[in-house]
Amino acid sequence: MKTSVTILSILSIAFSSLTFAIENQEQRDMIESQLSNNPSELIYKNILQAYPEFAPEFLSILLKQDGIDSQKAIETAMLAAPDKVLEIAQIARDAGVSNEDITSAALLAGIDPTQVAEASAAGIPTNTPVTPISPVSPPSAPSVGGQGGGGSGVVSPS
Image (cartoon, rainbow, N blue to C red; front, top):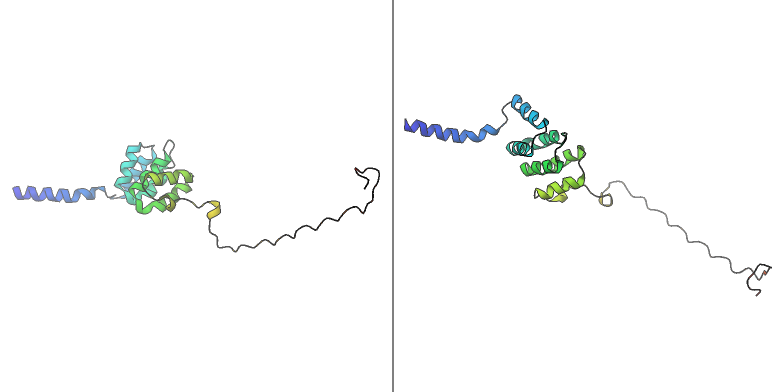
């Protein structure tokens, strides 16, 4: 009897880590429903950590909610799924989150911000050829003097 209890204990410990896997569409719908009803930071943090493979999808749902701190949600998603950082950043951009918030979230998550930051206008590499601007010729030299024309309205008669 003692042996069967021990085996049962070992099996329950071994399979306890599998309980976090999303087993069916009904469970997934329930999670999405929780995320769609303005969840607290603790709730979405626990969900993202439990299901990191779905972090980009769940973040997309979160960012549509009012009252969600987008920077904190992005940071939590990046912490949960560091291998999906680029996808997470793109989803955030598509949701209208500022590049500054995305970069700050990456920094707070311990991720190199250059991986997620958009290039500045000066640093965007392009494949289109640049047409050189033709140089402008210098102005012509002014004509010299009035040939001593004089006249009545001059300062000096010479």
